[in-house]
Length: 455
Image (cartoon, rainbow, N blue to C red; front, side, top):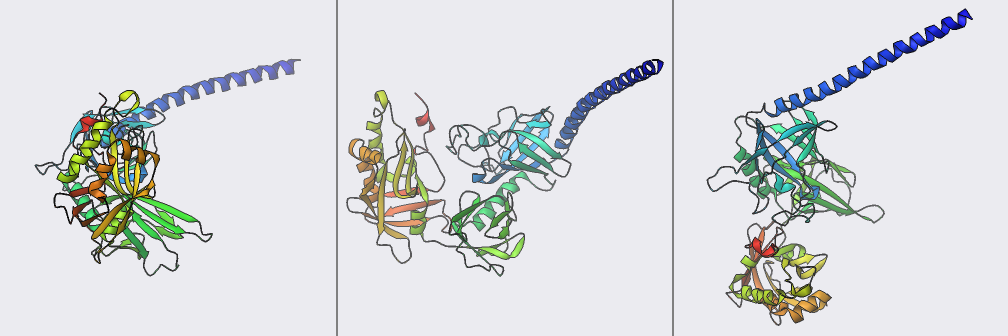
């Protein structure tokens, strides 16, 4: 009995000791977790402010748009931001004085399953990427460009910072800007490289290209889109988002295209082709489509301000019946007007209210240089909205400057044949009928954003 009592006493004592040790460990780890969190935030803040010329942020929202160069400098609880200009409403880019446009706002660091860097005060330069309803109509109305303004700090050293968007999880790199490098130079370098390397289409070639598969390479925003058919004859599409810098295109991540590992393109010293960073024996050769090919294989946006003296009054006349054409006599507003290939249909398209009118057109009489063409609308290729707008709201007259009664012949011109930002259609028979259409997505009423505000 004494032995049993002895062992019970020892057992209880052991439990007491273990309990005390666990309690002490709990207090120890709780205390250190809190301390570690505070120390980590202090360390991140110190490093953020340690770059005297700020940081270059390789910013990605929706990967379909590619990446953009954003410059940030942290001082006190304020951050100053500059960026490449994405759209006309974006407070960014280079100003008329030749200086970079900046915005300053509040930032904070906080603990939430790790350290969070938050741009918590509205900054027109930075929050352009994350606004739900982008002011230039980029993306959808609920998410805009799918950018983040809160980021988890994944790595933080004086040499580099790696962030992850809290909402969309895109990886963001930050590198300290050298003291002898101006913020303006990042923007101008990107503009020059992008213009130099731009091509609507490319072909994949080089000594290491062994197969005979037709790999079509198209430029879409800041993405290269590789399309080919695999061994089972299924179409495969590989998208490579990239950011532009002085040396070329930096891919968001390496991609595999039919067995070829591809990672970034170097600017090089010729604009006829660009070699891959990880394999100089593979390259993208630039293609030079004719202007007619560019017109009929892309989506081109019609802007009210670029319709010309002949066409604009006809489009203005269409706006009048639309003012009371909606439900309960409300106004139907034209959000987009497009010419070219849209939703795999060659035609003239509109997005107006909840309607999507469409009329197809054909091309003929293309000259040898591919810069003159006759456009003719095709009544057999339309949808119900198209017929309604044609019959009720004056779209017939609005289309007339493009197609006439039996076709209109245009001379085409642009700014950069390999990848135009615009195409100007000049009517060879009507000198006042000069219409410019644009590669960048834009609202139809681009010169009066108040048009889209609710009354």
